[in-house]
Image (tube, rainbow, N blue to C red):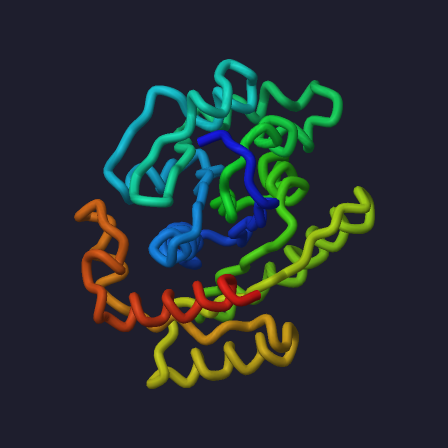
Length: 252
């Protein structure tokens, strides 16, 4: 929806490694904020198109059409829940990235194309699990970053590089962007490795590390029903943990 409103908080959910719960986190931060009464736009910026798969929806216009100026913002926005709208993605986003390579200021296209959109308190961007032109576009659009990190030692390997990329955008483009949450995912208190990884994250990132998202089968089942975990299993650990994460952004 396009109408005047207070300034939108722009948040990218990003990790260069796949399998970290990135889309799960993007969907539930967006849905949780919407449930709490905030107007939210969720933008799928991953060619895998998992946001549409999660909600069991399709749309003829995607974020690729927006990037390449084949559609306007009003053409690509799709309401999915009260207070929650989405912009979907699919494999054509990869082709759109190739088309952007020869453009000037090609890392600022997302920011330019989303600029006319207003009426939202939050815009959540679900990024692709890679370091490419799409990721850089997302970082130049966003002012905040959420980094989900699964409880595997290999998941820690690329974190320093990701942080460097965020810092380089801040320095090189003089773009104000900060890490607002590092989210431990697939956490098990019975697993010593999980405890060690969370301790390492807190030692490196400090207070921005959120309480962990516990390993929960309801989280993995929810998308097969086209539902968030808040709808599918509202009393589950997954729902409780994501509600707690959402409160960090409500009161920030």
